[in-house]
Image (cartoon, rainbow, N blue to C red; front, side, top):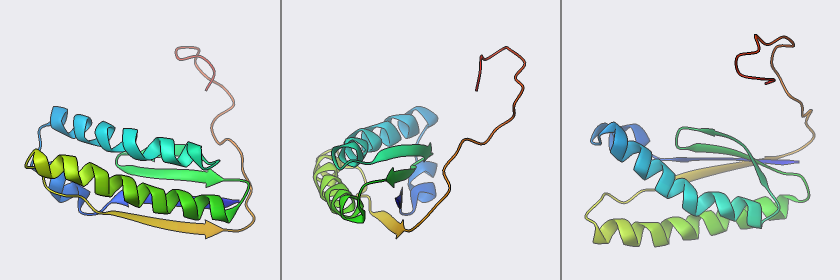
Amino acid sequence: MTVLFSDIRSFTTISEAMTPQENFSFINSYLSRVSPVIRAHQGFIDKYIGDAIMALFPESADDAVRAAVEMQKQVIIYNQDRLRSNYPLIVIGIGLHAGHLMLGTIGERETDGKYGDC
């Protein structure tokens, strides 16, 4: 399994200059461009953590590498749009690790019924 982590560099500095609504719009705009790339390369997203993504590639580390390269290309295109709108350009960092892992769901066995089974 290959694990991919990515995030926007200096996200805190960028987001501090935005309203909460602008932050949500910005993150969703960014994620809507890079998330499909992961799925297109046989990966699946394990979780979003604000601007960060953790994705898993079960078939091949090459899939993860190709996804990482394509994500960077999508950021270049996204930055062209941001430049036209006078928004600051962004840079993303991506890390990959391949190896054996144990995969499972962590949580509690009992729920209070309010939110269904988690």
